[in-house]
Image 1: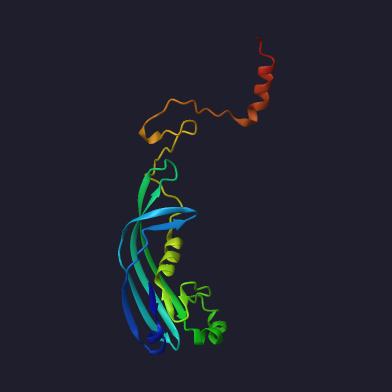
Image 2: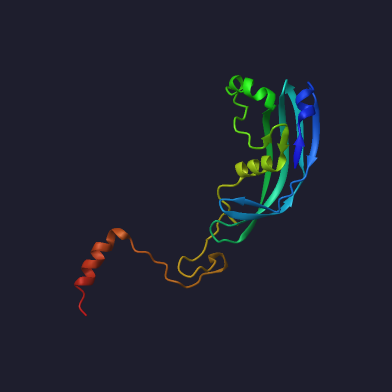
Length: 182
């Protein structure tokens, strides 16, 4: 959804509250598509904080279905996304970017603003990407899958021999096998 920011850029002290829909049915991350199972509307507050400068604040609640990193079972992961960005109008961007770039709250790379329009989908996708969990587990004590047969070890043992000998002892094992009588 594109939101025109012209009136907010030009009116000192103007505050505009907008409720926008996040229409994506899935979120693409590291080559995988994760379905969005539940989502709320995005609440945006656009505030003029100076000539040609707008503060964009927003909040979104959504749930992604992501496979467990150990056993690959689907897990519903709730994400609470809250963000704040300062956006400059194209008129002011060239002249003021040098003085504002020293400000830590100013975002130098803003791929969600094109001219006077705010692309809410791009903004929200960036924020979801930042808030993605590093590791997803179905439960803290998840046992994962068997490296031999692929059985989910949370459902019970599979009976496979998963013994892995210490590789530092391989040379000694070769000596014993060479001297073994047949």
